[in-house]
Image (cartoon, rainbow, N blue to C red; front, side):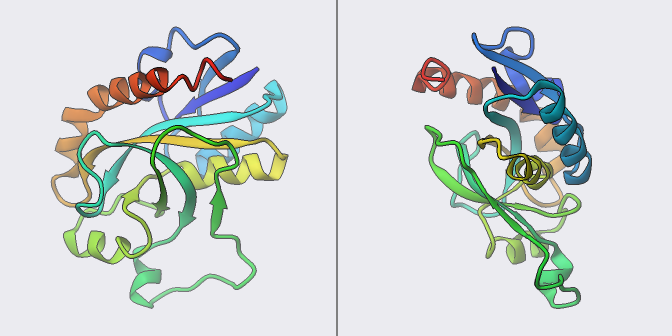
Length: 193
């Protein structure tokens, strides 16, 4: 059995009630810490052979287009205060987790700050880390790495990071999730699992 995760059920799109054969679905909540705890629990309870996280993300700049799908090559824990030089992490703290499950979409790193970035200046700073922002992926990847379970993340861009993000996300997240699932199905990803 393989496990399809998302922050909340709508981000599973049409797979929420109808997962592909050999897959089960679950949600892990919003935010990296909540996602890490929920993922660790699900890994212990269900013992999947692999995990795929599906979600929406925001773009920092023009490297990605609206409704572009991407495969998270790595999830990077970061923050605006770190980028501004006002905070730092101990040298031994992990901040990057790579995808260990190959995927069919274009690969890009994803920044995972502790909260949604709501300014254009903040988006410009974080754009030096990755082209996209997401909130849960470091937690999911960290839990999978700790358990030795292959993991991947497929995300779809549904908003620009900045002050218009909440309205754009609300208007686009359902369509984005539908398109992401369609792209994964069309690639044959689930058939090869």
